[in-house]
Length: 266
Image 1 (cartoon, one colour):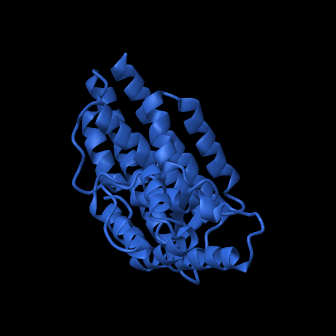
Image 2: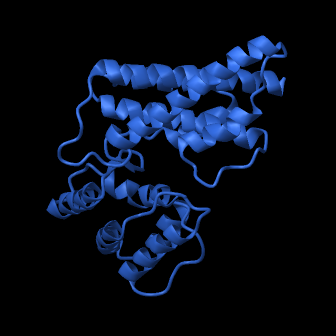
C-alpha cells in the first residue's frame, strides 16, 4: 500500500497553497502537473486543494506523497525574498510534515524523516538494467554509516525490497499479501534453483536458510532502529559495526538475487 498524506499535512498544505496562489486556474494546473487523479474538485481554492489531496490517498494507483511533493515543490523551493509570509508558510508545512515523521527535500521529495529518497529510483534502476547505480546506492549507505547508521539500515533494507519486488515482477511470480521483506524473500526463495548435485543442493539449501535469517534480521533491524517508521525522541543506539554488518549482508543478498536473475533471463 502506498504511503498516505496525513490529514494534518493536508490541512496545512491546502490552507497555505490556496492562499499563496489564490487562483483556480493556477491550482488546477499545479495539481495536474503533479499527477493528481481525476478532474478538479468543486469548492473554493482551499477546499479544492484539500479534496484533491484526499483523493490521492483514496486512489491506490497514485503515489500520494509524490503528488504532494509536486504540489508544494515550487513553493518550498522558492528561496527568493518574498517577505515573511513565504517563510512562515514554508515553516508551517515543514512543521506539519515533521509531526508526522516526514520531511521535504529539494525538487519535490516528501520522504520519511532521516531516510533517503531512493526506493522509487532503485526500482527504476532495476527496470532499466542500470545495476551500477544500485552499487552506488550501497556505497551511499556505507558512507552514511558513520553519520547516520539508522538511515543506512533503512536504505539497505529498501534496496533488498526493491530487488525482490523486481525479481517477482520480472518472472510474474505473484506478489505476497504482505509486502515486508521476509515475505517477498519467501516468494523469490522458492523460485531459486538448487544445484543438480544432491550433496551440493543440500549445502546450498543450508546457505539459503542462512540468507533467510539475514533478510529477516535486516528487516527487523529496520523496523526497530531504522529511520523508516520514525525514531521517537530516544531511538535505540547502534554502533557503526552493527550498521555495517546489516548493510554488507544486504549487499550480499542483492548480488545473489541479481546474478540468478541475469542467469535466468539469459
